[in-house]
Length: 265
Ligand code: 5GP
Ligand code: 5GP
Image (cartoon, rainbow, N blue to C red; front, side, top):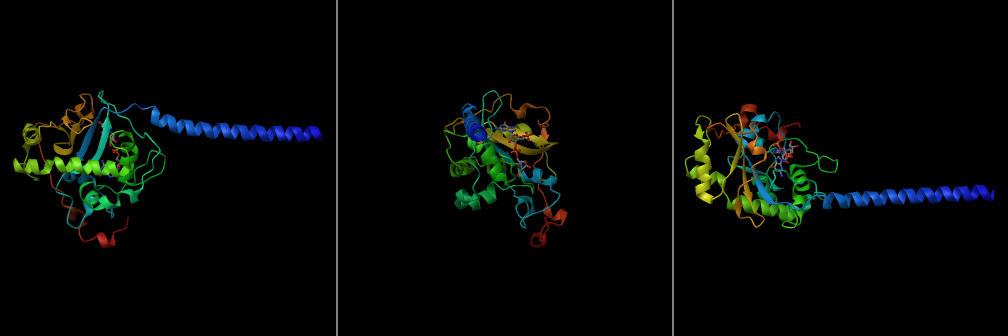
């Protein structure tokens, strides 16, 4: 009896010890998640051109900026503010700081206008659940922006501030590069217009001949710099032809305009 009791107590202690070790391992792995990845080297502001991106829209929902009654945005919108390494790679999912929409409530109007999701999809977060586009960008990229950007509010505020400082849509329009479904523009002219306006050299990603993304790179103090030479922009799949378009997207083509009150997701 005494022997049986001793065995039970031993078994209980063993289980308790095992559970304690397992949870310590969990905590350690979360610490490793953040300490494993070295500090980033520079920022990349990734912009998307809705006229191109929205062509992939097949359904509408409230959060999809392509589906607005006023039509898709006619300006570049923000995809993300991404911390990068000089070798063309980047850190991701650096801490377990979950996205909290309440923290950015005061930025909401600007985010809806200039950093909207152009899709109905719910991207995965770093930790398994599905969430918003903003949540995805914060958890995947924002959490790696330390020590320059320390929290979620500052991540989105910084993204917007840099975006407003480098008004690419306006610089292109001033140089005659306006959205059009018939014009083709020299890629070199587009790049020069931005260089002349801001002394910053963008990288451009196309889908066919349509500009899809445009990226600006910055040192950690947000002075302009070149993007890493081995980044995805040098991939031949994403490189643009000599003449490119800045198409507009007419959401009424999908019967979307005016239908938002009654859409079914
Ligand atoms: P894509 O395959 O569309 O080029 O990239 C898919 C995702 O990988 C992007 O949305 C972004 O999260 C990440 N990504 C691609 N290129 C870069 C980059 O140069 N820097 C960073 N930080 N992330 C990137
Ligand atoms: P990234 O490409 O930044 O790693 O991932 C973007 C994720 O967010 C993808 O799962 C994509 O489907 C989703 N997403 C939602 N809205 C947008 C958007 O406006 N642009 C892009 N590029 N991805 C979006």
